[in-house]
Length: 146
View (cartoon, rainbow, N blue to C red):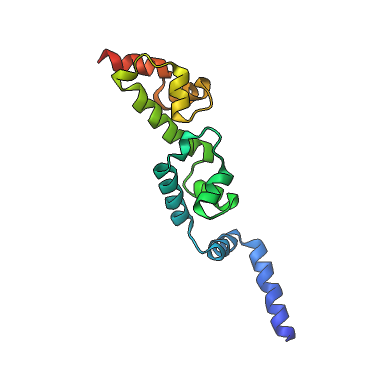
């Protein structure tokens, strides 16, 4: 029995020094890989259009996919993206879609932002500039000239 306790102690010592083993055990404990979790998150976010809610949170996403905030964050990080950056990609695509439709040419930028899930025009413009190098209104003007 003493040998068994010593083995457990050595195992814990190894665990504490090896982050990769910890991650592997954590994934096993949850029963789903980060890849599978990421796929489930994408499916839920897109199908239910959860990104359109400007108050959507990591906690709500975790509930939707049957996980927790920590695993959701780790799955996103494994794909090199943060939670809000990930949501804003979908929001930005929706904003571009709205802006590209001629029937929406008189729509206020506040309406476009709100209809895309952004909390403000400022946030939408920030994301648009990061992605396209121009603001949302400049993007619309450019499209309408064509």
